[in-house]
Length: 452
Image (cartoon, rainbow, N blue to C red; front, side):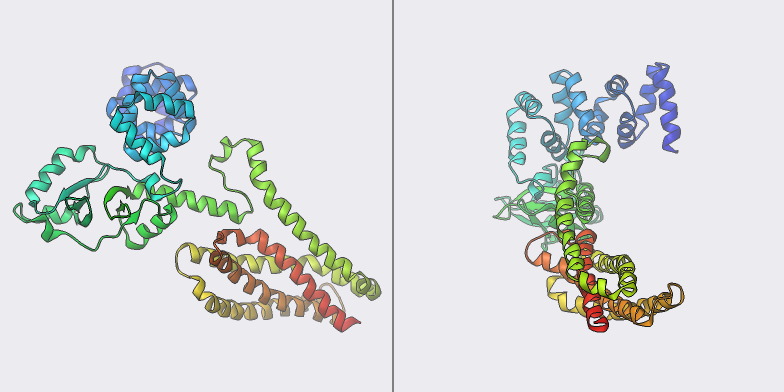
């Protein structure tokens, strides 16, 4: 059913205060849809509807709410109610909640948790931000070597309800060293008397607690995993990361790359909830850098002012072609840099491929440069009625600018990656600024040779 229809029906029940019907309607909805519905209510109604949720689903709904709503719910609930919700949350969701909440609220909630839970949460909070340890969960199914499939299935039936996933069984030795994994599908198809070791896949794909979350996401994508184990330096299993958290990481990393490619510092909050001052702070540094770097184009024009003045009408014609030349070069560079950045993000290209990428883009640049130069030459003669010498100067400049822009666009992200910088920094704004200056140097250098 369309969510807008569901929202309208729930609004009718809320506004008419039909509590019993509203409670029944909520019990039939997905927890994600409930969280989305709550996001559109004012504080009073949101809290009223949240209190109607059963204990079985309130923690799940809470984990999908945004930080502002979570804070309001925590402030409205008694400490005992709030602690019950936290206890019912999976560990990774609880840690995410504590990471985003004010320090005072975190201290109050942790003080009410039992000692074991508090120690676990504190351990998670000590992992570096955006590391595998900070996003993993400890709710997984494990077993030791030597047990039968029947015994393992009995353990899953007994404890699986409290686990985030039961699709993969992790086989450990007495020191909790990860030896292998067993897919639930294999266990269902095997006899109860089969020893789990005979079904185990010893070639385990795992990450360590300090690995960056982007590396974890790339590993999960590469091997098509539903979950990935997290081990410490001694290969002891300490947690797992499930695919739903990987999807969140991919969304977060892609958003960060898009913001960097648009010459902005990344923002952790939603756009409409980000203060204006924060938006200004995120955008100002790169705008200042690009503005200052763009002054080089003005310096180049000033340097060649005498040539432009002595050329008379032809100098004016050259100046009129500058925006077209700079825009074309910037667009060509942006195309190449976008493909290069995307290839790096997907692991399709590495720094060792820089010469291959350069050779490919040079050939692309030559073909595009010839076509654009010929079209531009004809346009200037037929539509702008410029002289042949001006059309030739601009067209040659166009050809060389396109080639240079393609070369810079494909190589700069690779060079940035090689020195530890984010390749997304070498995106359209910076490439355009560099190509602008280069295109002017090319244009005026050619004009100096042919006009003087």
